[in-house]
Amino acid sequence: MLEYNASPGHQVCAGTYEHLDSYLEYLVEYLGILPTSGTRIRYSWLDRDELDERCGAEHSGCADALESAGERAIHYHELVHNVLHLVNGHEAHWLFNEGIAEALDPEFFLSNQDHLVHDPRDFIPVEHDVSLGYDTAGEFVVYLLYRFGPDAYARFLVEGNPQDELAKIRTTFQAIYSESFDTVVEEFIEERSCLADGYPVVPYFCSATEVPWAGETWRYTATLACDSEMVLGGDNDRVSVVTLEISEPGNYVIESSGAVVVVGSCSGCPWDASTPVADGRLVEVALDRGRRFVHVDGNDDVSVTISRRPD
Image (cartoon, rainbow, N blue to C red; front, side, top):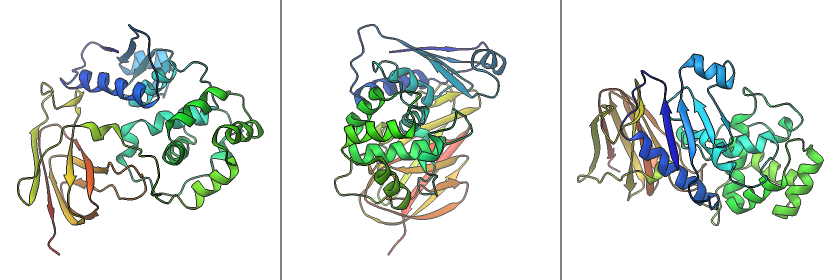
């Protein structure tokens, strides 16, 4: 589904295109969209001057219908907007449009989703502001997906309108979710607990290649050369993503060299596990049983080692 372009002089790493093309497939499947044959989404990695002309100064990217552009080789957020354009009639309040773009951006899960959040209702009356409300919008939509799944949210987007005020949002929410908008917001603010029957919210990174354990130690070593199909991004902004399986819960030691490493949960509940970050040092963290993604950010030789601390 993807057409990919880059300004002259940019080096696009070998794994980027296939990774993003598969990401579009993931999005249409997750949102239950059946694109017509031949549908193409076009992404352009632009120089700053070109991006300013296209998107406006100080914007990191923008999307218009089935085309988007960004200042980086990969901009998941804008591609979500492109795919949402395929949902007939989706024009909800900006908080919910940006919220789903954040929630389905796997980079949103590179930080812990357990900090204090604002009340989503505070952002309903205000104009769209790129510096305001994105974290809260993303976390609230992740909460809605976890509680109710994507089908209801897709209907909510279709029934919404950019000019909706709080009263209209309450009415639409009640009709689709059969629950009070204010009650769900209060639950989101006060206690985002993990439920036994919660819908799994799994970051796209969790579909990456699994690296097996070697005895008691898990190790991933690589040279993040741009011509490697395991490397995503471009120029000096290169990453590699793999997964591992934790078979036994316990305390684990993560050690990295040459990279910033994030180990994120694939459990389906965004608040049940910490997201440890290792930057050239030892990090000890409690890990539950289950699948995890390992996001490795570096430019040269990198090494990541994970081992279980003896009880």
